Image: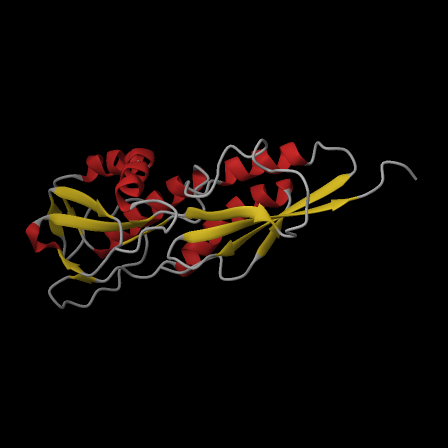
Length: 223
């Protein structure tokens, strides 16, 4: 799974909205073929507009399971992270229910991944990743990995900046990163007269973590 936040990004409110659209394009470019054991048979199935009803080979999938990788965020315990993640992304499990007991091959897996990624993105969770680990589908279970995008730290770029962001942003460290929350906080801070506010999202140390960095430029309220 590629990291779309390999570089620091500076965003204002409008850029946040544009980032959602751009992220969708990046997901298509970065999407890797799932590493699934299909009995060694070569497949060159293109991604289709709809779910491919006939594929060879394919496997009857009776169950869809999600797992979180073994590197939870340092800002939240694994137990809390699991509860937070699966409560928030229950819609993903619900979406997959319609494909239970259907024969699914590589094209079908790609279709499911792209649709799940699009749904996650549409809800604002732009740093959350979903993928497929290597596995054998012959047992009738499809395992998906869910790497939740977590806020590692939300802070001012300049440590000497006075004031607080806490009343503006409906989120904090240890929470799932959601662009809607960040946009709301950014717009709230920009309501303060005589100050310009920008925000950066930068990758942090642990897998799935990002720092949200706020820059404030204040000017005199008179000319």
